[in-house]
Image (cartoon, rainbow, N blue to C red; front, side, top):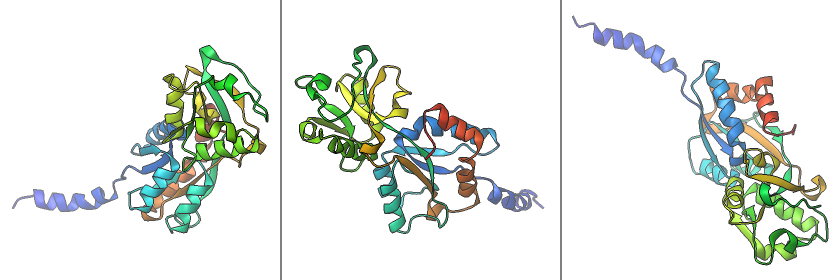
Length: 250
């Protein structure tokens, strides 16, 4: 009698219980922090999560169209709200994870600090023909915050036609790094991962909606693993990672 079929049958219950890697959809601005947290999760004995980083709008729409995801970490509440309206969140799992601030960024070698206030001389920042790199205000959270701030400061009319919209905040950052735009509007945390860039000014918190990053388990991926990872994000080691990268309390 051959033993391998019996051994295979005995092994199946153990294989079924094997922990599968989590799939985490996270806003582009969380890239570095979440990669470090993924390493912490793996060091605790779990499979390293599989991350998908992009604009929150892109990720929310992908989930709504059936993309397999266990957790969603958004850079604003709008796209988490949108997913909730479509019944895409596991009940009771949503909470605010971290906060951020909005800044004007320039190449460190050409840094000109400015006060972001009504009456700002746009040409002094961008020159006669330069464009301002931003996440696309039509759907990218950082771009939506940027539009709010520019409107609140009365700068939108002068800058609306001079925007260089990008598909994510990290893409906007990259435009300034490459010299394709003399300045950009990004999150403060993004500047910390780019040694070539520096903060020229910080937008008043009152000029835009509070920047909060809600996190939730996706309904189609709900289970003990995703819920455990969501709880893990609130532990002190993870909080230390977020603080290291400049994120604030929500």
